[in-house]
Amino acid sequence: MTRTLITGGLVITAADEVHADVLIEHGRVVALAAPGTQEWTADRVVDASQKYVIPGGVDAHTHMELPFGGTFASDTFETGTRAAAWGGTTTIVDFAVQSKGRSLQAGLNAWLEKADGKCAIDYAFHMIMSDVNEATLKEMPKLIEHGISSFKLFMAYPGVFYSDDGQILRAMQVAGDTAGLIMMHAENGIAIDVLVEQALARGETDPRHHGEVRRALLEAEATHRAIQLARVAGAPLYVVHVSAQEAVAELAAARDMGLPVFGETCPQYLFLSTDNLAEPDFEGAKYVCSTPLRPKEHQAALWRGLRTNDLQVVSTDHCPFCFVGQKELGRGDFSKIPNGLPGVENRMDLLHQAVVEGHISRRRWIEIACATPARMFGLYPQKGTIAPGADADVVIYDPHVTQTLSAGTHHMNVDYSAYEGKTVTGQVETVLSRGEVVIDRRTYVGHAGHGTFVPRSTCQYLG
Image (cartoon, rainbow, N blue to C red; front, top):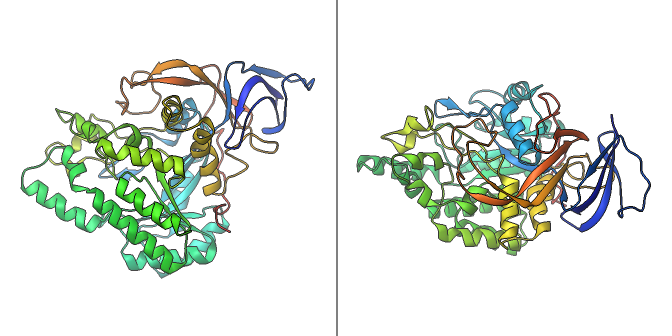
């Protein structure tokens, strides 16, 4: 293991911005010092002059190899984590899936096996509970002991992942007693299915109708209901992929009451809209995800929520499906388009662009992309910061260079970019994962199997 010294850069964490040299040894940050004040020797010196030195990103919501709608997400753990590294993300928290009628442990084992030896960066898991019953409720505390401390439930997708209010309440009660965290996909799936059926009966089959039937009010209603169930259970709640201003208002109201309620949004809701879903010649299918893209006017509320901390985290919900052969399954019936967008490689750059455009500060960029997700899911301070003792997950980021996002240059295993042709300022130059160089001045030098499974402690915002 080499000793690495990063010199001359502006070190940005959620708490501070300081010009400092960073010393790395045995995979960890061992010291920071004012430039030139320490005569450190190192096997490798990285010059970060005129660059930012930031913690590796923590993407707390990805779906590699997820089975959905008769197909699978097109990124494997190998291709997806490599793409994440290219984009400056050094830890993902993916979702293990419990199959109906099977145990949580069986689902976890299946996903551990999928990821083992494949990942270029470190990884952890949440647990999707698709069958809440007495046996699976009893398993929850055991999973928490083994570093799986968050459980995702769905108010959407009846017949697939859906849980009713009684099942949700029971799971929340267990989480409340065991310091587990319930993550909620908050959309009224029962009502949405009625609207889907009615739209198709009227011959409304194009991708744009996906967004129209998944009403913002049904996201807000489900968010409100989830909050009230969590209050009854005495449990914390984390609402995933918030896209509607009405849902943000529900979260803000709950937080104003001092409730342990948290919200996440994603770059697609901040930068894309129903205009994309309405693109002609079935191109809109590229943008089908759930919750859906909203009209542009919702974006202001999401940015405001990120500034006021009513939304705490930006994750990607990376779940890519190729346009050819996968998204096309829904030609003539929008309800058959696999739901999901690629984005794990673009998140850090898009959020830096938000800094450039004045939506958020540099420290808030690091907070919502690195530090808060690490704290929310029990990974901090091992991940999400640059401090003595932390894993040396460090990104040298050039804030001056411009790049154009494109499927022609990205590394995700998908045949289109959701941000095709978008020019952004800032680019990842070099990436270290636990002190090992994965991206070296825009060259990939990592390998499958470097990434290790990271057991998580419980949410650090609770008590």
